[in-house]
Length: 548
Image (tube, rainbow, N blue to C red; front, side):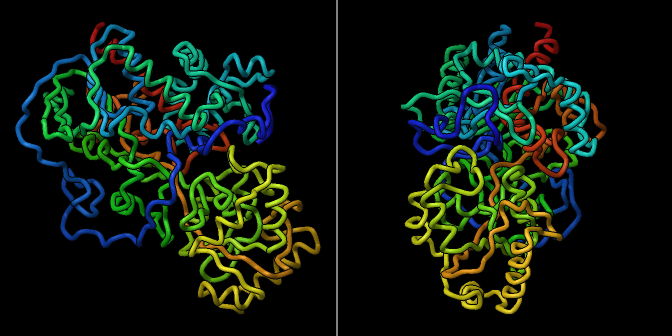
């Protein structure tokens, strides 16, 4: 990441923070250790698929809970399901337009995973203009739909991007402040959040302000309450059935329902059931709990169509198994040294991760097992001078990784040996195969050119002097970015692509924005931006639908 014309530096960005969280991924993470390693996909359930089993796989993941008859009834213009960034933006926007709102949040507090974001994508904002950026909405739309192979709707992208500059100001008007606009992947478009010395992270500070603005609307907010079913009548949304943790079953009568439950990254069974791309034996969700696919299940039950990319995941690449997020051990996991798979072979240009973690994650996803190898010499250099490559806001070249060794030595997934052969034996890789890979790679380092993968010369450091370290790494993912098909008005559509009137879908429940991967190198922070903008756009359209 390069500094924009904002006066921000990596060191000053981190001053006064606790554990910073990676937010390029959007509404994805909450600082935690890799919480659960995945297993290989389950066998598909036998028998024909039915309407509530759209994938033809494992029926159980699509079933809704039977909660019995409602005990309490509420009436509103809008029922928002999910109190993360998207749900809060929708609640504020709807309230400002004179609509009454009931907001249901599964967790005990609002915010969801949005507190783990660090910034959001925008086009034509005052920040960019002040930094001298002249990019246009049309250029950004073309870049993104081209990146996604024209699978998403160009009109949807245009509606989204056209609002981003105004949304930056809308956020600021609600005391959700920004600190700078930063260049990532050649795009001066990532608007990073402001935070003070007391904040846990930029996203926590920003989200706290968003929570205050949401509560100030006077909307009825019910926390510790899970939506269970969307009510549909004559092809239109009519309300929601929900159950609180205390057992109370609610029926919220509302002609507009906003679905924003955060996707399915916390539900590994659901992930395996709907995504064919789960080859890697070690998968880990680097994110907040509670994002279990509720929105997709309810949406399908209501008749919504799954998009082409409903199984799309925001893969982010190596995470040493057991390492805490945003630590020196995590930063060591993604350094551009030597990465190999279960066969002891290279499978990726290792410096790809630095500029496009999503692509790096996809490459790891397609291996059965993955490992990161470096020298004692490399670790010593990181301890003194920081990582070779930038790791979001918490791993900065020039800032020592002083705790890397101590953190790594505590992990059972980390091994050390004096020879390559013994290193291979420590993890069960064929020693001869790994030695051949290391010898070939060292040859490229000597000649200063990687003819196969094209690794940048500055990162061609040989694995030539022991002791050597090897990390067993899981393929991490921040969130899911696939789900229910929508049209340019953010309305859910049925299998005939006809809108389900009154049912809107935003944030990570949406599957119409991406093809096979997150576009971090093309539109950095687009998922966080989509969360806020989709909530706002949906309620603008809902106002017209209700004739308000």
